[in-house]
Every structure is written in structure tokens, then in C-alpha cells.
Amino acid sequence: MLITRGNDPHKGCLAYPGGFVDYNEDPLNCCVRELEEECGIKGTNPVMVSVEGAPGRDPRTHIISIFYKVDVD
Picture 1: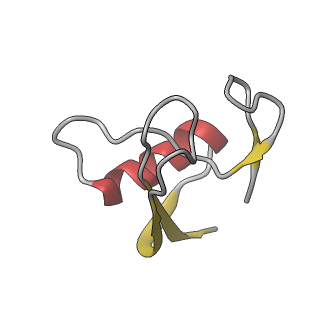
Picture 2 (picture 1 turned 180 degrees about the vertical axis):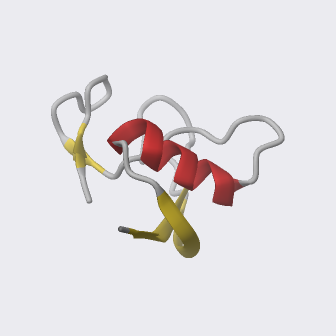
Picture 3 (picture 1 turned 45 degrees about the vertical axis):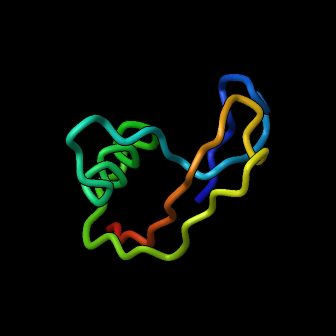
């Protein structure tokens, strides 16, 4: 699933739905929370697929992304 970015950087481009992990939040809980916040879809059973963190990937700062496969209805 992809979304269209609403903010810079890369406003208008396609991206995976996501966001930032809150302080004291488990990344597994974050991924299903962000899916619901961004797409209105409830997900379950997140399974990590990949971690990406090459410097320079995001112009704002060094960002580390964790990708999950999530079951949805």
C-alpha cells in the first residue's frame, strides 16, 4: 500500500504509510497505530520485513525506517 505524501520533503510523491515512534512506544505498536492514523485501516500481527537507514536517504536528518508486513481485513 502506498500513500501520496502531503508534506515536504517529496510532497506529492508516493510513500509507504508511516510516522515516528513515540517515546516509550514499541515499534510493533507504532506500525499498527500509524497505519490506522494514516489510512484508517486496522492492522494486526506485524512482522518485520526490513530495516533501512542509509545516511542521506531523507534530506531532513538521518532516519531509520522499519518496514512491517501487517494483516488487514
